[in-house]
Length: 387
Ligand code: NDP
Image (cartoon, rainbow, N blue to C red; front, top):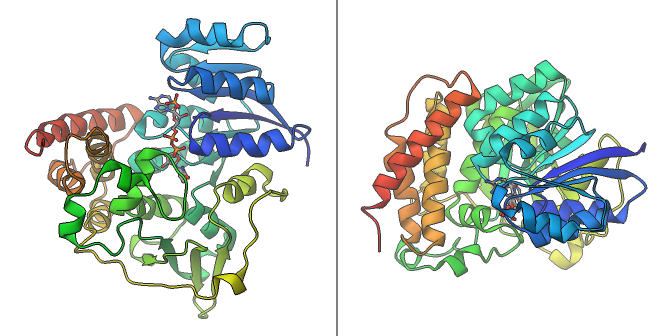
């Protein structure tokens, strides 16, 4: 493998830290040109020093002096603000990890795609809101878009990209989250601490709550639709509590290919870091005999309506996925802040979704306008659910 220049957007988050762990283990293979964060100055400075980054960028401009102080004497350039994040994203690195959470990652991910290298995409919200625009940008610049989400990375590894017509179905697996067996009544009272305690994966707070409502799987259905050339009704979801089979691809002859592995994000991240080669990771190996049994169940759409909501927004098209995503971001933040109950997240998303526009956003500015309007409506809807 030749030495690659890399940039990590969202370097202080869960995916960012897993990426840094792999990069720090192979310093001869990777040269880190830029790391970005939002406000975590200490985490960013520590990471930049550890991997010898050229530049560290903090999105919140008020944090610049603190970042400069934390990097003093290191020779690492410090920068701050939205434009500096865009510059880091579009720096022309060979490989960029897009791991900012939420639609805040949209413009930086687009900047990375426009610069034409390989973009490892974790930031699913950007693809949900602006899927066609993002894949179009990649086509125009010649950028390679590699999915980091474990399900989509699994599909990518099993999918016959040269013969998509031979694929009959894609099955995304879902752990079912921490409330898989809870009744609606029991879910009404769950706390943010319970919701972020995922049974199999260690992740950031927002995606952990999305996994608990199953909105994460809904967003992933939309993400899969943009990444793989199949009709929307060819993507299905099955609950698989062990999170060992990361997804499956069925072919017209009845063959089903699956990718399996321990539930550790470093496995799909390593796949995208080394692609098309492979690299060694320290991740736990799969012990099928110790596992013994793998379970599969149909999702319960009555207890987890987020999945049906996402399916409807995918079918509606236009601005609907961007509205759903923005409303969900507002509602999840409100739940994490203790303002609303767990079940109210999906109620707010459903109410806001009724206001979507049927026209497909034609530019990133259009997507951001739909996002802003959906946030305003979701904030208004939220007021009726405040505790
Ligand atoms: P985290 O919340 O752990 O990290 C988010 C990162 O984004 C942090 O570096 C944060 O900086 C930065 N950030 C947040 N807001 C902004 C902003 N407004 N401007 C610039 N940077 C910002 O999230 P995860 O790592 O869990 O998830 C990242 C993305 O990857 C999400 O889209 C998620 O859906 C996806 N994903 C995550 C998986 C996981 O295992 N965690 C698995 C598959 C996909 P700071 O620390 O300074 O706040």
